[in-house]
Amino acid sequence: MLIQLCYASSRVESGNDLLQDLSDILATARSFNQAHDIYGVLYYAEGIYFQCLEGEKQQLEGLFSKISQDARHHQIQRFPDHRIEQIHFKKWSMKYVNQHGKISRLFKAIGLEKFQPHQLHAEQMSKFLRLLLKMEEARHEVQPRTGLTKRGYQNYF
Image 1 (spheres, rainbow, N blue to C red):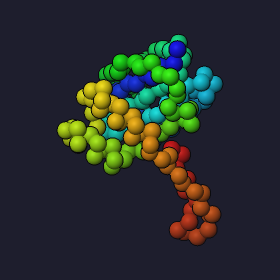
Image 2: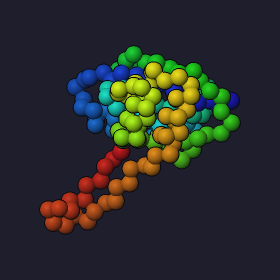
Image 3: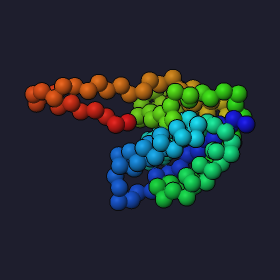
């Protein structure tokens, strides 16, 4: 049975910086998820991780058990699971959406001053997920490494 499992958690401040934590989470998730037919999206803002995962219930339960014990997360709130007929995030073993003004505006329109996914009810959660699904992946073309202004920076996320 295919389900959609979403949760929010607070980031534990540790010796690692935020970019290192996000990089580690994404690298691990993309490798694991691809091997287990799990798809999803990760969003981080204002000290809160939000992740929505899609796949077979048994696979997701095992994965969520591991996430629940991950030292980078605390105050984990799991939202009600939804049975789904198809995978919505099929293109991504783990899509990462950078902090974005469209999401901030959605939360303000809902009446929340900051990113607080745990305050969303079902209809608002659906709007949020649709917005995450529609947002384009960050596209960063590699620039040739010539001159001081073209150093070839490429964002990992």
